Each structure stands twice: as structure tokens, then as C-alpha cells.
Image (tube, rainbow, N blue to C red; front, side, top):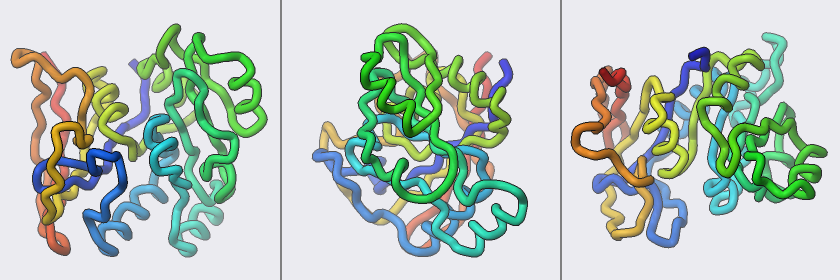
Length: 227
């Protein structure tokens, strides 16, 4: 299957939570990690999130560094990578920050079950990829993105989109910053939520690198292919 190189970047508490049970963002890492993340954004062809992240956090997904934006422009690129939202039912608000802040392309991936009126409104703001029947088909979406010359895709989503991508065998690497916090909560989102693997199907990783950073540790994992 032809697809982009896909990596997840996430920050989590020491107990594996990426936000509180109210799904409110918590500052887990500091300025050094934010700078690292901005570099990853600038070096990617596209950044992808799920609709849950858009509705909860309304991120702009822009490159913050003026120097990095200038370097992208000098290379003949838009200042910001393509911003992609996986949104089966076309629920992305037309006033979302991804449409308002920063130049660049936007793509919304919907399913055939998305209401036509919502899709038509989003078409005024973004390119639309229709993939899947009731839910957006991530494998088809990845093929479509690669055909659009997206070679390196960064995922900054929540536990649902991370689970969907990992369980579909579409992720190559994972960056996880583990901070010095305990958030707790049975329902607080983790790096990968969803239905979970059965024991025989658990996804194995290979540790590529580990370094202390600020008050935590940055881990870089290779996602191993399943037999």
C-alpha cells in the first residue's frame, strides 16, 4: 500500500493521560518540547487531527517560528503544512481556527454518510476527500494523501485517531513526551484509546531513542510490522 511516512507526536502524563477527564488540555511539557514540536511541524508535508481534537481544542496547527515559515516559503512551500481533519460526519465548524489562521491548504476527510449540506459548506473552505461509507476509511485517506504528494504526515490527534491509525497498521513512528504529572481518571484520554487490542494482537514497538528533557523524558518508538 502506498502511503506517507506517518508519525504520531504526543505529550502524556506519567500515568499515560493526554488530557483530563473533561478533555481539557493540560500543559505537560515546556518551551523546549514546544520548539521541538514546531520543528516537526515545519518539516512535515501535512499535519492531521481527528474531529474530536478540533471540537475540543480548536487548534490552528500552524508553524509558530517565523524563521521556519520563511524557510518553507524560500523552498517554494506554503508557510504551513497541509492541515488534515478526519471528520466522518463533516462536523468541522466553518469558523475553526484551521480555516482562519495561517496560509496553506486544508483537507477534510469525510465518509459517504456525511450530510451533503455540511460537506458543501466545508468545500468552500477546504478540499474534501470522501473515503468510506459510515466512517472515514483511514487506509483510503492515506492513499489519497500520498497521491497528493504528501510524503511525511504528522499526527497531533487524540486517543481515538491515534488508535485508529495504529490499529490499521498506518503508523511508522511515535514520539511521546512523558511529563512529571499524574492526571488520573478512568475516562481521561490516553495516547491510544478505542476498543483496544486482544492479547494476541498487541502492537509491539522498538525504542529508537530516549532523552531527558525539561522535567520529563522524550521517547521515540518505531512501530514494528505485525507478522
